[in-house]
Length: 457
Image (cartoon, rainbow, N blue to C red; front, top):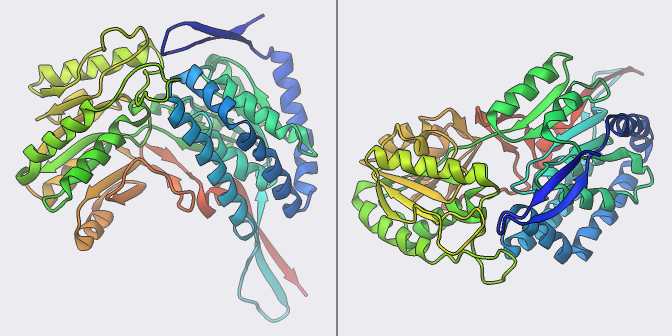
């Protein structure tokens, strides 16, 4: 029997083997989802929402066990894993609260003798290919609104974090139409067959740009809808009027939280020349305060990278930057005494624009920094990327922040904040960072189709 081999990235120890679904079992799950979807949609909206609210209470009840599973499988410190469970619960509550309004038919100004409205109907069966780095909140952004809207959902989770998918499956097994949610366990190499299957109406994928392109091509062959949340190379700009200590602490946290393994992590920083040296001093002190170690320990503040390939990529990016003339201010190596895939929080100064660490997604605890002379240069350099997920500007000046909002080519623009998703706002990428939206009202709209209702009375 085929299986997934799960390795603890903090110790490199074998955790368990998870049996994969055989092709016949996958086909049966897709058939059950297809058959259940009309019945699930036929339930009144309030009934669906009530059932979903009760289902996800299991995440509150089992919070500690779920958090520890996340930590064992992908290395996130257990304190951060608990926070991820809490974030999931916050998103569930918010999305359920806005669902009746988001999914309500839209009225159109009446004409004599006619009734005109726009209904929001489910797409059918939604395939969610979820990522390992936030194994709970990446899928909830799709699973909850898709089910609320009356779709069936097939979750294909990352082979690195199958326990997260198992927790979703247990929570949703109590639905009155349990077949409306299916958890499929297969290696990534078999995901293409799911995307190509005619029983899938829409595909949501979170991961790399290269894989996202393949998903997009495969789905387009049969005109299936696609939502893509892809990579980022998110910039931060620290203006001359910024509160430097606050900006440095938060930009470093934006680069190093979850060991930098976030699509919206701060991956490059531009600092006004007048405050450049002072910013680097604050940032160095902040980075040196991280405590690496066993992520199940309460005092650990940074865990390992997810695997050997991720570690090698970070090392290659740092080596490339140093070869091109960047200065290493702290970190830049594997810590002594730890056997997992650990890498020290790393601060690089004077990093040239052509360095890999300024161009390609690093996905590790590395902050490359360079000085800029003014706001105009900052905007030019921040926009000089094929990615466009988020960008942040650190300033006390509201007018400056609004100028950056208008000028920056990104799905989200922050002032004095970074690396954060508010469930009230659509999560969306520009350029190669993605297609479509999750979260907020727009997340529901992306997982439904419009039906024009034109009635002569």
